[in-house]
Amino acid sequence: MKRRVTGSPELNSNLQRIQSCHTGTNNARQRLARRILEFPDMAELNKSQSRDARVHKTVVNSWNEWDPLRHVIVGRATDCHIPPPEPAIEAKVPEDSDMRGAWGKRPQDTIDRGNELLDRFAETLERRGIVVDRPTPIDFSQPVTTPDFHTDSQFGCMPPRDVLLTVGSEILEATMSYRCRWFEYLCYRPLLQRYWEEDRNFRHEAAPKPRLTDADYRADYLSADVGVQRRLEWTSRKFFVTTEHEPLFDAADVLRMGRDLVVQHGFTTNLKGIEWLRRHFPSHRVHAVNFPGDPYPIHIDATFTPLRPGLLINNPQRRLPNEQRKLFEENDWEIIDAAPPAHNSPPPLCYSSVWLSMNVLALDSKTVCVEKSEVYQADQLDKLGFEVVEVELRDAYAFGGGLHCCTADVFREGQCEDYFPRLKEA
Ligand code: DAV
Image 1 (cartoon, rainbow, N blue to C red):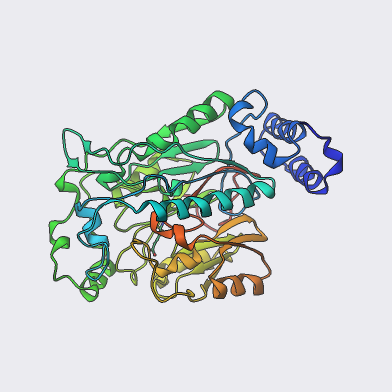
Image 2: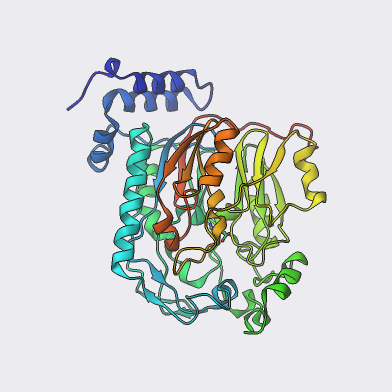
């Protein structure tokens, strides 16, 4: 049933925000406004998503991590597998981890619990007027065999952020750097195909699939006696598990900051991957960064998190090196230490570190979703003047990460701006 929009202050403010947005095309604004007028009740809108393609026309547009979020993908824990050993994964799993030697489908009760939390997170976003789409899991128990490699199972589709990089009206499927994640993009294809049908400005792009032969990985990283100290020494020298054999990147190594893309060079993204992004986005300035304090540098979003223009939190155990800070300092960005995590260890069977505490999702430049148990992080953001939205997600961490990981942007208001005006042209 359709309701009139005038009765809802929240929707009126949404409409005002859209109307006051001086960005995107007029068409895009009108389409979005029409969508909200037609479906004033957002819960109803989302229930009807599958059958409302005529009315609910997607617009893809997102240039940064903090403009007002209007449309997002939230992942699923369904059928998530612990992948069998492969070179890149062995290097990430610490010697004392409970995942060493274990692989196969994760226990169904943990999957159900993960899905419950992800569904609730999606509902929280919907109640705030954000349109939420969900991926279609493939059968992750299937092995992957290409002419170049074989692996006995796949992974899952909880973290769309790892796979999909939204830059303006483009969504780019990353190369990925694990064999078990080679086909993960298929979970998002039903959505991307729909966006392509609905938004004639949408660019659906895919980076060249890598071959992922043994030449992509350093065999010496696998040896059982490599301890954390040695690996810290290696990562500070930018000696990572992946080689420079071919371009590799995961989308979650990229921070979108308007005209500038900040990309972590580490285990999942190599220099050729960064160079590929540079050539692919010629109107952007692409900056390679690295964080020597991280023995397992995988994805930038538990290390370096922009919250609003001019403010970033940095993991105090993985500080940006001085020479790389200049870019930010000279352009009036403040980098502050993130608050400590509330937990001493990650949940069981989790690949990520306790620093998922800072894997927050900005809904706009004043509102941030923080995991409910991360009280220190919430407190820090509160003191910085943000409205903190608490979201329970810890029991879903094991499926691929936190609040930022389990989402991928489809639409944020705003356009491409220059947040580093003192930077010379690249
Ligand atoms: O600290 O384990 C997790 C990032 C997941 N996208 C970490 C990084």
